[in-house]
Image (cartoon, rainbow, N blue to C red):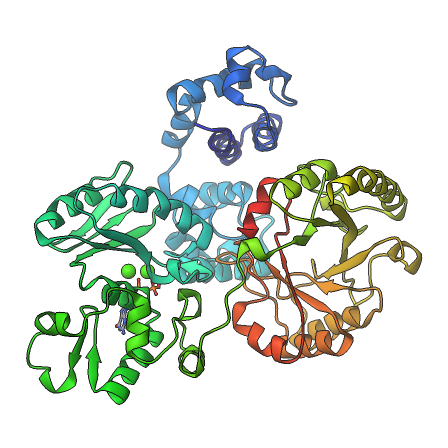
Length: 553
Ligand code: DGT
Ligand code: CA
Ligand code: CA
């Protein structure tokens, strides 16, 4: 177990204790310990070996023993016991946004509700609204939360899916007989959320059974949902479904292309093949449309495409990178000539929107700068939270002044390494679009990011006007996460994005792509239009730690 997993266990114990109505101090001891572990940079195992775990703030002898137990046995007895003592469905209730252990305990004790289905029925009957501390509004929120869970269930954030898929791909590539292996589907296209992960492998037919057997017996699988002679479906450790298809190497480029999708791109590609070349195209290959009665497999070799480049070339198209395969004009563009190269991580010279320990970041400004330097960046933009974000330790004007002094000192030292910290802030957009700092304070910054962090329920018109007013402010440089969406968690607030983009264009302001996989906001679908209006883009990690800089990768 690593410290992240142990922190998650402590967090879970805190929740379970709260569900059981345990002493709040005991609950807090576990949640605080989870926080402390998450921000630990030292090696836990080494600290444990040296008997120094209690040097971590918030870790007493009892918790130190628990950490040692988790390190040596891979689980915690207390956690197992707590889990066994509660009805299984009860924990499920906590997946409802805004529905915490306290509420779960009340509905369980008073209404014997222990599943989402029962909770939904209890809300529909009006029983939940009558519970102490609930009310009509809270009952409506619970119903809306249940609807959200249903909508999102079965999908995963792209980084979660990628982390689950990488070891599987490595295992497949290491299998005897595998000629080529790749990830296909929405994950290859880097969509913002992923339904299932698709793997394509090429091999000789004789090797297929061994490869499928290896796939269906991967360590840590939750289940095998289907298995045939050339394909199988499994559920990976994190609950992510994965499909594998094994094809011949002649079919590989076609299968990879087909299963990369998107479905809409496939349909457009197929239409082009028919119209331009009188060929039908499927996951096995091209075949003359007139010879449809013969099997595609039989004809495949006559129109060989060893790579996807060759496949697109056969249709008189420039190669289309997976990220663009959404039938949003990419075929027309690729018919006109080579597509522009996509921006790669190594193209970035620096980034903005990073937090430090001055507000709610886990790492110091210096640590953030050193990490950015190590990643090859020439600059890093700091943007700690403003005054009103008290829960995120937002800075008042006096602390901004202190921070400015420290940034200056750091820059004096970093300059010799050719590196610069830009001093900025993530400034709250207040109720009517005013900014959270006065002019004098705003003048201290090299640049200003503005963001909406509250009053998410405004009408689209009011929200759009509010953001537009902030963008009109001469000291503002860029807009953070313009829709406030949290993928698979929270819908975007109502806002008219074309008008926000127009306001950014009018005032010459930048809009960020928040690269945190939970946000990916502003959405990729809107960038073509933004670009046409000349709006520039900042690719920002919204980093709250050194580790979060990886969001740019
Ligand atoms: P997901 O898994 O929901 O995130 O999205 P995808 O795009 O990975 O979809 P998935 O796994 O159902 O199928 C993988 C690819 O296979 C998909 O992107 C395109 C192709 N495909 C699946 N079903 C069809 C279909 O009915 N027609 C066509 N033309 N292609 C399909
Ligand atoms: Ca998929
Ligand atoms: Ca699939």
